[in-house]
Length: 215
Image (cartoon, rainbow, N blue to C red):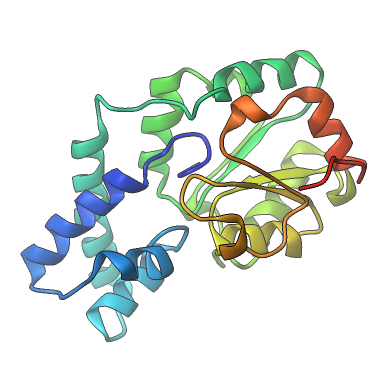
């Protein structure tokens, strides 16, 4: 979802800046690329606080930071260029569509409902729905089960290294969305796009079949 459906990372960066400054936690913007984008909050908190963050403390800190994000991002929700046309074309072509995010469900609800795309989705999974987070493939394996599809017929869109690895480990073809990283900063994808203006149903079918144009 983040960096794929909507380019939220600048707003997550703003939220983490406020959050870390509140808590006196040092950070650099360069660290965000390696240790924030595409990562679950349990990892992010542990890395930046430099100690284990568990249980109720993790829930409280996560709730505070994600609440900041939603406050900052509400009113700015906007789909990635070409996404809304692409998802409508996928639905019309008979594709089964799901969202599989490491974000909390409240963030997912904000984005999905602000964009009005819930009717397009046959599976909606957030952080609360899995026990192991990306790069573990659990969220994609569960999505495939929900959709009633096999990995060989599945196409994953991801913008982060951990997300790409999760999709690959699940056995799907992965398209790297270059909203947050350059192609050489991601594990090897089947194809790369700057946004969904560079994607259509015919190309999606080619990629799934392993016949995509040169990346």
